[in-house]
Length: 312
Ligand code: CP
Image 1 (cartoon, rainbow, N blue to C red):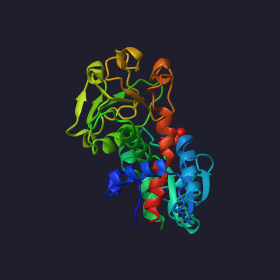
Image 2: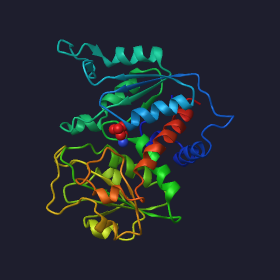
Image 3: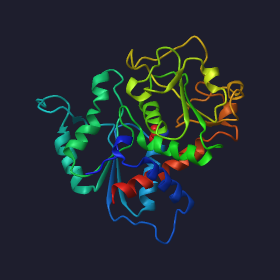
Image 4: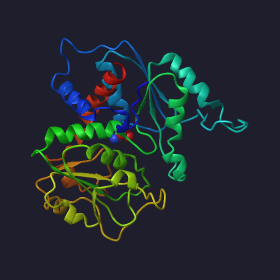
C-alpha cells in the first residue's frame, strides 16, 4: 500500500512536480481524472492552507471529502499495551480501523510535542495510523515533516526559477513561539533532490537534524548566504539540540529589504502563516517579487497530483 508521508515514499518526485505543473496549466481538461473515492481528513491541530487546498484538490477530482477537527475533545491513545484507565477513550487501533471503513484515503495532520524529541521523531501519531489503518495515509504535516508543503515549494521554485540552476537559500528567522522543524526538514529533503545550489543559513544553536543537512552548505552569516540568491525561503524553527526551545540570537535575523538587496533580485518564499515584522518586514512581503500566494495556490496542484498518484 502506497503512503505519502515523506519524499522517501515517492519513487519519482520529479514526476509528481511535473504532474502538479501540468494540472496547473490545464486544470479542467476533458480528460480530467475523476476518482470515485472518499477522503477523510483528520486535523489534530488547526490549518488554513493545508485543509482548504487538500479539500479543493479532492473536489477537483470528484472525491467525497469528510473533514474532522480532532484537536478538541477526542483523546486517542497511541501507545500499544497500555491500561486505558485515564482520559483517553479510544485506542488508535479502533479509531484507524473504523475510519478505514469510511475512507479510501486518510489525511492526518499532527503536531510535535516539542518536549519529547524521541516521541516526535518516532512520528508516533502518523506511524500508528499507518500501522492500524487499512487504507493509504497522506501526511498533512506530521511532527517532523511537511511533504505537501515542500512539494508545492518545489513546484513553485521550478515555475519561477530565473536560470537552470538557481541558488536557493533557506534562512532561519525569528519568532515569538517555539515552532516545529517539520517545514525546514522537509524543504531540505525535497529541494536537495533538485538541480539547485541549496544553502541553509541559521544562527548557532539552530542546527537541523544531521540526516537532513548532510553534504549541504550551512552558513552562519545570513548576509553572506543571501549573496546572489534567486530564492529566499524564510522559516522559524525551534532548537533540535536543546529540543523545542526558542532560539534568540543577538543579531536580528528578520528578513528585510536591505538583506534582500544582497540577492540576485530573489523571490521571497514562506509557507505561511507568517508574523509580519518579526519573521519578515512588511516591505518584503508586500513586494511583487514575493511568492507567498503562488506557493499557497500550488498547494492545491500538489495535493491533486498526490491524490491522483495515491489513488492510481
Ligand atoms: N503552510 C501550512 O501548512 O499552513 P496551514 O498550517 O494553514 O495548513
